[in-house]
Length: 123
Image 1: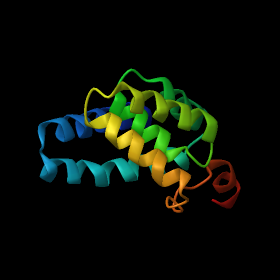
Image 2 (image 1 turned 60 degrees about the vertical axis):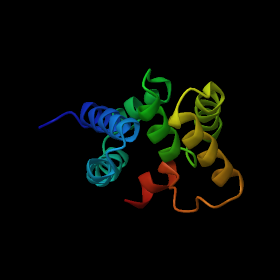
Image 3 (image 1 turned 90 degrees about the horizontal axis):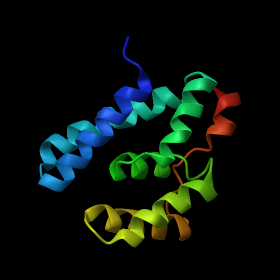
Image 4 (image 1 turned 180 degrees about the horizontal axis):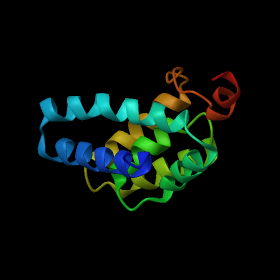
């Protein structure tokens, strides 16, 4: 069985490459796999979730954006800080994505994001 964290990192990096290369067809397929991967990690062991939380400090911006977005309702301060750091880079599409995500979060538009601490007891 594949390590869920390593698989998630691989998918997030690959999705980032698709974004940078303009390959939306492949990127859309990876998006679906990423959503499944995040859900699997969320429902996994506490050790797996803790390892996921550490990805807020990953060196790849795509990994950080995906992780931060997934954790906005769980670790809001840390996730917002990670997104703000990327948004301030202004070096590529990731800064625009991070800025847009923050804007939507601050406006209350991202209502589908789960608080993983609450879902631990619900699952």
